[in-house]
View (cartoon, rainbow, N blue to C red):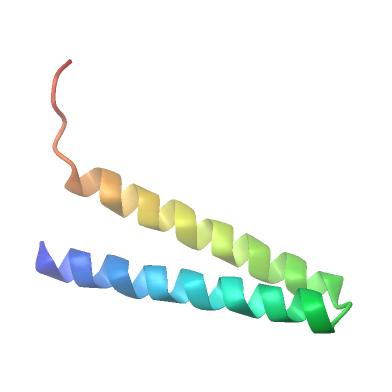
Length: 62
């Protein structure tokens, strides 16, 4: 369980780094292709984080 928690933290750090990269590129570059690529990567990373977090949460019947 701890390994997964550390892994999720690492993924969140990567997600934040991508967000910062995108922000810098949007301010100082017109490289739309690279910005789009990074945004897609950031979204895939977020989806992966969400999936891992859901797998750690036990199903509780309503």
